[in-house]
Length: 196
Image (cartoon, rainbow, N blue to C red; front, side, top):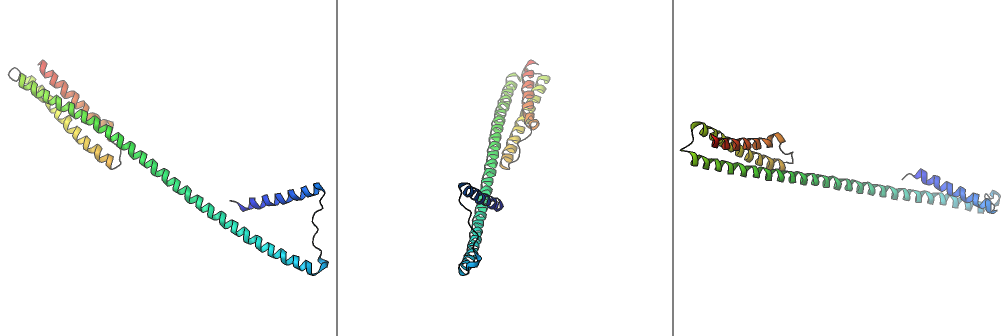
């Protein structure tokens, strides 16, 4: 708080009081008579005592205002720290939720890759006597794509889990789309082997 403005406000109130007294017809207080002797000395001593008391009160008020200002600054710093911690907790929670969604998506890809690979194994067992070299080659390429997709999914699941714990960002979209493309290619090759 600025004490200069407090003193200016006090001076303005005193001046306003004097103007009001003049308006009502009350004469302004007379300056003390210096010819009276001892009462003037008593008044001078009282003035000095009053000035000292005023200085003591002003310093006490200033100290109280400084203490309040320091307390308010401390509270403001604590609120800022709490806000920063809440924002960090929110970021961590959002990061964790994103990692959970990504792991669920990768598990779904792994399930589809595993089912696709098992289905292609069944196709090979069913068509083994009838399949030619071209069909077996295409089916083998499909197996390879499905197994690589499965391995990439497992690798990405571990990577997402690590990055979620380390509070880093999740894998890029290009890295997570690789297993999807390999899965699609493996399923397409397995289906194409039926046509050969």
